Length: 298
Ligand SMILES: Cc1ncc(COP(=O)(O)O)c(C=O)c1O
Image (cartoon, rainbow, N blue to C red; front, side, top):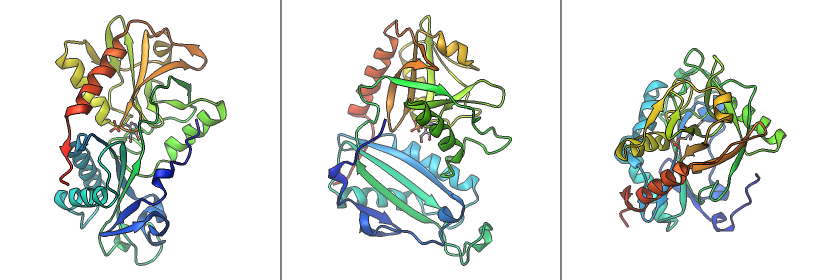
């Protein structure tokens, strides 16, 4: 699925370290750590009806990722929030917006891997774009990737880092297969997530998702678990094999970018798509997006 350029984004302003620049001039240094080694952490946030959905959870995860990566001179929560609000204000954006927030280790004094070459603090980028849910109204086709999702033995998926090669290689397989995304397995062959989202299955009224061992503990994933608990829907976190996905009643992915998206087929096995529980969860999620989130103060 190739996304087309949205003309509404042609003159957006992007925040880079305290300066708002037209997208054509929004550039970072070749000495920045994100260029030198993908050495950055990031968050994807969504704005619904004048509110930033689950803002605090995203900022907490950004800060935890930065701490895990041992970043120094990290901006405060207040500074990051103000940068986001200023960017939205400069672009007069209040709804149907996706924000990509990137925090890099900052500029190096010379090229190289060593974080000791970073002597001037982090770089903060706030990229807010007009973008609706990318999977809205779509049913996804997936393939299982040959690329394994990182285990904590290699690179802990709990760090939301910008070194996305693991996922990009899986996405290339999906592209070559002509489908939307790829299911990634963990080192034991159990389902971890897709290259860009968490994954759930429903069988006999029970909602099941993999333990967050080799997947990002997604904020939307957490919200779906919470929705189930609040509404007495049976929810389990456990190992899932691909065969179980093939034979599920319903399968769906979760993420800020694509919300709760129904899966129609995996490796050319059609999912039964019966039961109606996913539609109920989608509806409960939508209700939250209409009321929850931190108000944009302008
Ligand atoms: C690999 C991966 N899994 C899952 C997600 C979904 O996470 P969230 O629900 O916090 O957007 C993302 C989003 O960035 C991701 O990159």
